[in-house]
Image (cartoon, rainbow, N blue to C red; front, top):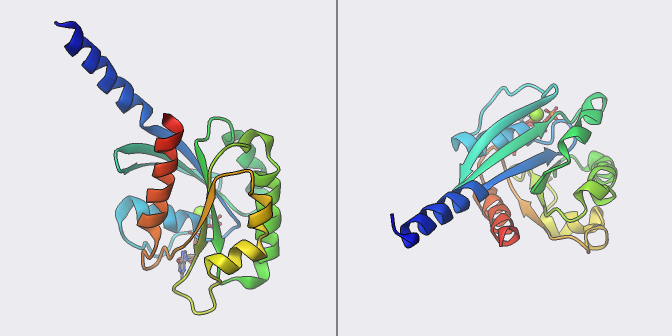
Length: 188
Ligand SMILES: Nc1nc2c(ncn2[C@@H]2O[C@H](COP(=O)(O)OP(=O)(O)OP(=O)(O)O)[C@@H](O)[C@H]2O)c(=O)[nH]1
Ligand SMILES: [Mg+2]
């Protein structure tokens, strides 16, 4: 076998191997983390998803990437379980129920504790999903940035906020395309 074919085989193997990422999906209970993950996996809204206990680990194939998603339980009594998943994460998705205005302060606090002020996730890109945009009262990205103070809290970090609906699929592909773009850029 020539040097070039050995080299290109090695390179292809390397590229394949590096197109793997571990993504952590955080957010309050009922934000839509599991529904969103299932939407990306199946291309459809799945009804009747029950609250997660512990975590769901899935693999999503998106634009040539094998993405292991760790969709954690958002209920308060399970949040201590998030800690073990922080090391080795390539990115974080933080899902917010944008239609639940009353819980936005709680979402902001949890985002601060577990992401903004978390040294293990210091340099990790963050995709913020303003979910449930199919509901009329849902807050949209520009207002969400202000209400969650993201323009200040996240100024040292690469982040984006996408208006999504895990029910209709609106914005989901665009949001994941942004995420994969971050993975591509961080790989080089
Ligand atoms: N209208 C609407 N409902 C949604 C959307 N996404 C999720 N839901 C609903 O919100 C509820 C909670 O969704 P889950 O996916 O279980 O939320 P979760 O964030 O995984 O919750 P935990 O597992 O408890 O942390 C379910 O009844 C979903 O059908 C959405 O985009 N629009
Ligand atoms: Mg869940």
